[in-house]
Image (tube, rainbow, N blue to C red; front, top):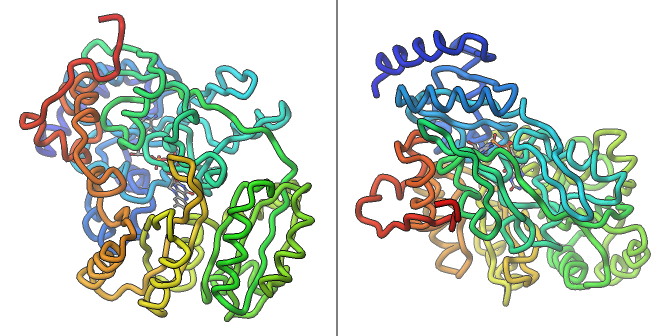
Length: 467
Ligand SMILES: Cc1cc2nc3c(=O)[nH]c(=O)nc-3n(C[C@H](O)[C@H](O)[C@H](O)COP(=O)(O)OP(=O)(O)OC[C@H]3O[C@@H](n4cnc5c(N)ncnc54)[C@H](O)[C@@H]3O)c2cc1C
């Protein structure tokens, strides 16, 4: 559909649904069509001129359903927007259409014993504010938890804080079920239990509209946030690794930053020297007593310490220096930097981290996050900072990582299969065929859809029983 045809379709939809909350002003629509893909100089250039034709913020499911029906009738693309903190242009419309701001659907539906069900547009921090008094917190959440939505985490996220215990969001047991609206002339509402529900996870909202997510929760702890510093990188790595591999030390977050990364943390860097390496940990109050002897063993020093309650009150959590917040803080100081996403091998990640740091020197700076993988192994992933020169050099660096048995989850691509998913998955395409048969949801993002005729697709990938 060209832009004139889209304009025409949009005018008809607007005429039919004048009471929806519309945003039509081009500059505002452009701003709302952005996420954090600009962390990548490659994506920044590729997505520069892409935007929606209009934005709608439904007040409830009924309004969303009216919009879905109208878009299907006029064959106009529909793209979902949560907090817009995604990194790979996940919500940037490639072929125009209507961007749907889901933040109006933000109710907690149910809180049980260790389980919460909430609407997709709710912010993750709001879920925790609700569950904390009952003694529960999220099992894993991105460092953007204050802005990011539940639907956005499901549609585009991976995990983060808490993944040291529970692995990524997609690890078995973390997500219990989802409620989905189909993109059809007569939209259906489906309740999909895990594991089938995970076929809609990290699919950028291209194969279904998530209305609600049911999550398993973690027991609440009294957390202490610490930043400890080291003169030697290997000492810092070994401190973090000892911490990670001590099951009795209860923790929520553990990350290692090679110098000069800590110097980019402008609100903290008065507490240490610019050439020091740092470890940020979030540790349970009852486990903190063990830090002193571990620090002594690895020649480290405490630089910042605060309780999680103090951090929340001051809006100054150390968790917001971890995961891709590290990149954000660094880019504020040096806009020529970019980043990688790497997954080390759980059997020898310590040596791989040392080898890769030595191989690239100052060109690729180690930022390492400790976590469990889907199988429960303690391992490490990297969000290394890269001193960017050219796209060719960036690709060369990624090839070298792969050649050294370090997996790359390329953050410089916008199609799902080129990033973390890694390959075309017929079962994910099958879900799109069943739930979005006209291919209107976030078109252009699921490469498998373009070659669907060559794939063996399943007619009932979600194992729905009402058929
Ligand atoms: C500074 C920074 C730090 C980050 N740290 C982390 C981290 O620690 N861990 C991590 O996993 N990610 C991280 N991210 C990426 C991002 O913040 C998370 O993935 C977050 O969960 C996205 O939520 P959102 O509401 O902002 O999603 P959005 O950006 O709004 O959307 C993300 C994707 O989900 C789709 N979507 C949104 N709502 C729905 C819905 N209801 N149904 C179906 N699809 C939907 C969108 O179309 C889009 O494709 C970080 C990003 C930044 C900029």
